[in-house]
Length: 126
Image (cartoon, rainbow, N blue to C red; front, top):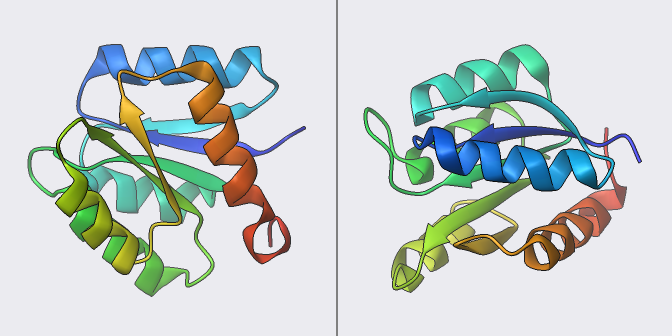
């Protein structure tokens, strides 16, 4: 497996947890971003296979970043990351182009299953 993932979360600890799960399971972490503005810049620069995107971040939310990334690349594969109780925001993110979601705190099996589902959508890559 060589899927390249961009991790977007304002919490360094959460990015570390996701990085650990991904790298232990054969994924490549293409890069990290800590807000939506940085996520868009990093996406355009790195062109990862998939993105894990936090919903609530400073400067620009994950929902706004999803819209911008999907406008740039209509085939972008984005998985939203949310805390419990953010169901309304998750549904809005899905309407805006996110393909799946995972709930914090992260469970490795849940993260890996969401990545597998997302990779299968649209034939798995560019």
